[in-house]
Length: 219
Figure (cartoon, rainbow, N blue to C red):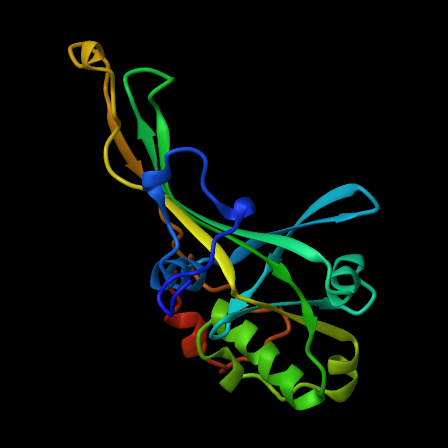
């Protein structure tokens, strides 16, 4: 491992289509910074679970949060091994055969152990980072966290030490014999775009949509 790449062990070594993989730190960071939802995999007494969660990257760590009674957060607090994945779907790759059809995507897999963040100030900063990842600048718009809210919230950090990115882009790769078939082939691009903000029914008149919502865009 170097300053620009993540370490790889047996569990994080790509087995198939290795040319699509990368351990480059900037590549991993960029995918994590654009994603909004991660899936956290863990096992309790031999039973596997995969839970979708919001997250944020803060330097060389991932941040997760939830209620203190959450089984997942309690498990992460114990320092158990977990696997976190993030996937960005960029398009459907439509080939002339089902076998050659695919998807354009960017993904990251992170392995590690969680650590609980303690102290009101550090926990509040982490929660602000989580909010700003989903809605940039939002932490400057809402009120300060209440002590009872911080006490009811578990925040876990996962050091970014072992991670692998994998991505596909471009057109389909049809068999040469299929190129003359009278079948459409290409890519259907996909993107996450915001709709019109919907104010809360109890919002008083005269409050404008804040910049964190008005100017939102993925990535």
